Length: 458
Ligand SMILES: Nc1ncnc2c1ncn2[C@@H]1O[C@H](COP(=O)(O)OP(=O)(O)OP(=O)(O)O)[C@@H](O)[C@H]1O
Ligand SMILES: [Mg+2]
Image (cartoon, rainbow, N blue to C red; front, top):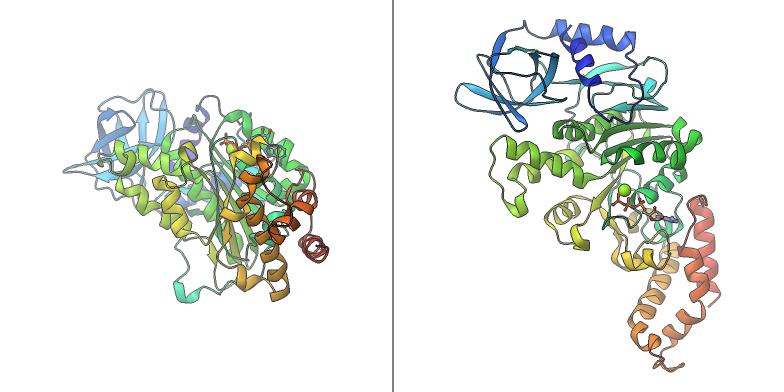
């Protein structure tokens, strides 16, 4: 009953990308069962509501526990985020309107639960796993908490196989491995989301889970219907929390998507998890932390943000069976690659793809700055021959970059550096190889063959 009852409250979230929230009979049944299994309900009351945070007294609550606030406009679900002397600070998963001091609060004795399972394939759901598309009710799912545990270090298989992503510049020069976690770093509007949509359509992984966190509502439909299309959607699950939703909901969306990916991985599948963007997840945690009374530390981010990142990102990767290859977009503030979140995320992940605004303004898409991007598993997932071709191309790109100033002012004298000469001769075909239309998805074998041809033809 308790989990069931939070659905209408969630309906009220304004300007949601959903047109209709279908609640499945199965979901409701499972919600009912989960609620029954929880310990008996106790009753407390709202003592204050300041900013995003509601103080509740009269209940013995634990961090992460879901509570139901009986507001004047109906029940509202919230989660305990901090504990004080005789009170708990809770953050709501929907609008706070209608909540007043003295409102009754029921504990559920369990964290928020989300559905996972095969029934989610092809579906668009919100941060709580409820359908946001016009599709039929969810079937073939079970309810679980969003708190998975990362595979233990010694239980993780090593990364030894490539995971082709369908983008030539990545598959050859920054190759991803099955179970690798990579960041896509760029300033705003440089092409992060577009690159992710290419990857979701071009990857050879059988299942993709996409978390769209803090995006503009307009972009969500564009992404799903335009970029992903029915083909991409068939093998995908999309979890959406737009920028107008409460911070806790945006935060939860990241964990829900990760939990869904974990379920498929635990079935032995190779899953791609794409999160756009992890910066907005960090911002959501900043709002949650500050509202709960944490002190701001680095650039206004409270310490809990830096604790949250590894907890979230470490859950992807290889397990005993199956894998989650994860791609997280990172919005770098003012194109500063050393901003605290970018720095923290880069230190946790096994590789980074850097997008350059300079390339984007030249119309070079995807705007991957190959020389700034690295894959830490490169050696494990490529053959020596492949690496030789890739290294040669990197050398040519570096030679061209270093001589660029001289070339631009016409001061470069042909013949003074053989590698620069070659880079200039092959400039056109190198750029043609690195540029790629959104619709053009190249299998990795073709990309390697094309790279080899460039390497041989110099
Ligand atoms: N592969 C591509 N081919 C052509 N144009 C592209 C490509 N990738 C990106 N663009 C252009 O760049 C614009 C911004 O791309 P996108 O929305 O993917 O950037 P973003 O980094 O996700 O932005 P934000 O930070 O606002 O989320 C697009 O509207 C499009 O015009
Ligand atoms: Mg984007």
